[in-house]
Image (cartoon, rainbow, N blue to C red; front, top):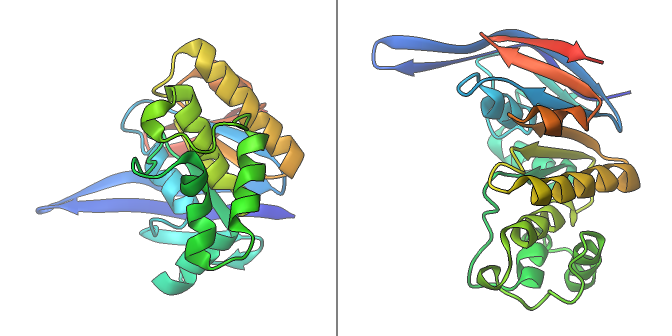
Length: 224
């Protein structure tokens, strides 16, 4: 079964009187539990594509399917509910709330949804990313790699079926990047998540097995 499918997806922006085409008629089927990487030059639209996959952005044309359900025509409230249930995001910048501890940052998505057992589930997620004992540290007390691991824990605390990572190692040195990437792949396997990693790094992409290249408005599979 396809976990995530894009059918003839196009995205355009209007700037003044000019219309800018990011990409045109992109098709991709990602199977349940599959892990892929999307590479491409700066400005190719990788982040835009990931945001369409994650329903943060709507395509100009085309359809998005998640678990076989067409979602691109849903209203904003329905999409927000779907994202909270099915999709976890990891961004290049961790976006942690500085005034809250690691535990509180990870608990936040569950608190917003009003789910019970938020603290225990957040502790489990922090342990899964190797941060047991760092629950009460604030972001300023953590290294860059640790902050990004807290962000990963927050992304998976609701046990989404899809994990989308946008340049998750972009601000890290290569040694720390390798550790974070190994962690993401471990979580992918342990939790059977469909995983999409956007990266400019060939080294990062090659860890995923299947690599897609986004360039000049087209998406092609270059390694399978």
